[in-house]
Length: 111
Length: 109
Image 1 (cartoon, each protein chain N blue to C red):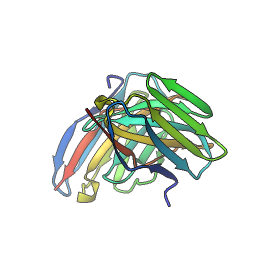
Image 2: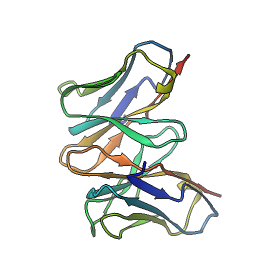
Image 3: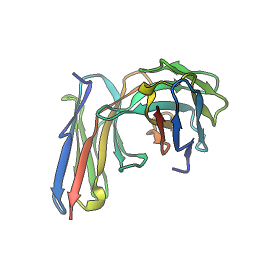
Image 4: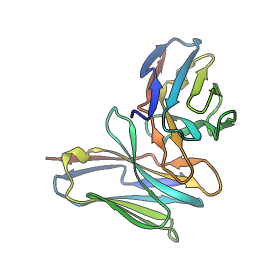
């Protein structure tokens, strides 16, 4: 999905390590989301940003921090990774009355 | 009980069959979305509905607001339709989406 770019696509971490997942969009949408997808469960919202400079917690924010650097970029940081954070992470963007557009996902494994 | 329930969870069909996937929800919504996710792939939005019916190619999506129910139909199914189909609702007056757990569809040639 050229409109929403997530990096990296894959990452393996050890417990306690930190890392930042990056999301960048060229669609000029105001709202940006971070989700995690786990087997047998629907996508769950980690954090949301309605616009540059604002962020809100979602359903499962513990262990994560976010930064809306500008309108294009929304990063997700794991300060001290835990095995329970092994998941596939998706970034999505949206404008008013429009569907969400998703990135291709980041597959994260924590050993 | 999940606020968004999909059925069936898994579905295997022969090529050419007519397929229906159902979604029921228990919250007030401003819109309902149908998404498609191919194995190992990203997520693509198929439809956004707030009322009535929409059609795109062989795909048809309907919603009944009073009954809090939506269906996704695939006519003349094809192996390339094999994917996970996800129902999601945007709750009224919020930015938040609630996702179903998905229906895994396999279409055999």
